[in-house]
Image 1 (cartoon, rainbow, N blue to C red):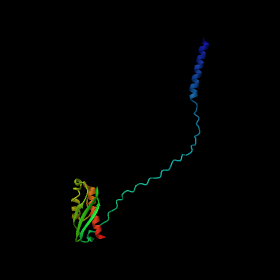
Image 2 (spheres, one colour):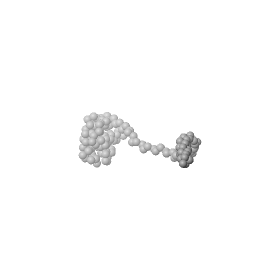
Image 3 (cartoon, rainbow, N blue to C red):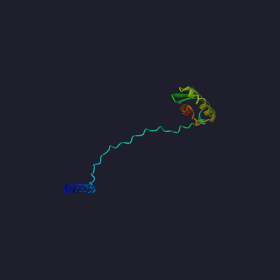
Image 4 (tube, rainbow, N blue to C red):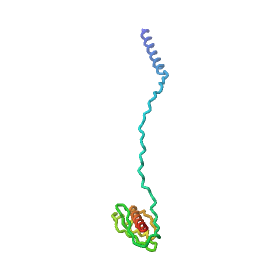
Length: 152
């Protein structure tokens, strides 16, 4: 009975040797495969939409505006704002909003405050930050349009 037991031991030992040394083989590195470069479509850079340029508004020399009553209009928040400007002796005497289609609750933040500031400061460079900034800007630009029409 020693023979089958001996044979079994030999087979087990051989299997163990193959397992240990078979796994310890050096890995054979395969040369890298050169891949053909894939041409990806070149994306043309999208033209960025031109930002509305914050151009400096045209300056108005109030002292050069002839005496008279002038009307001008400009865009507010919703629609055009039409103003009447009275100039005398190179000074703005009054600014009155004649027409607008703005929301009344908000427009009240801009009118009469903005016209009063323009007359008080004798300038179109007034603070238009309010609850109705677009409407306030519209009033200022309408006054500018009225004064520029007088000097053309």
